[in-house]
Image 1 (tube, rainbow, N blue to C red):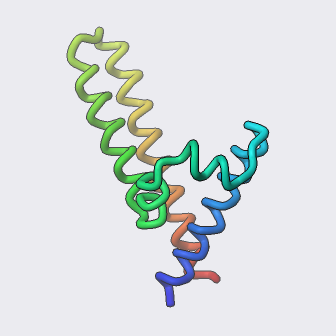
Image 2: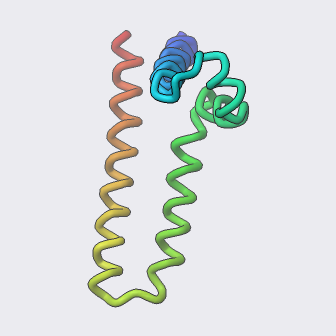
Image 3: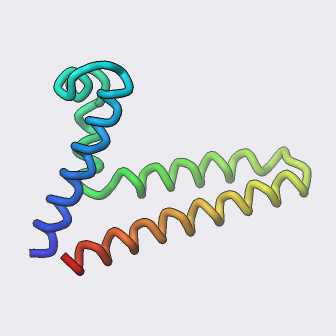
Amino acid sequence: MGFAIARNLAKKNLKAAIESVAGRLGNTVTICRKCYIHPEIINSYLAGDLAINLKDKIHHELSRKLQGLKPEEAAVLALLERRLKLSLTDKLKASLASRKAA
């Protein structure tokens, strides 16, 4: 039952996001979905992999860029990375909590 609720919530979130983008672009939802969003982005989001994949990529990019920075710059990037991790973790926890409550 939990998976079905999570899947329905993900579909609602996806629909709302596409409607918002379509409105900003002045296109229909169908055109926006077919022409601007790669199907694997939708599949990845519905599977719950998108946020994790993005977090991993950002972590890799930040780690690679730390090498040539001054200590102060590296400290700022490390702070931003910690905030990003907290933000993603908090969002995932909130999403799971809302799914359990439903």
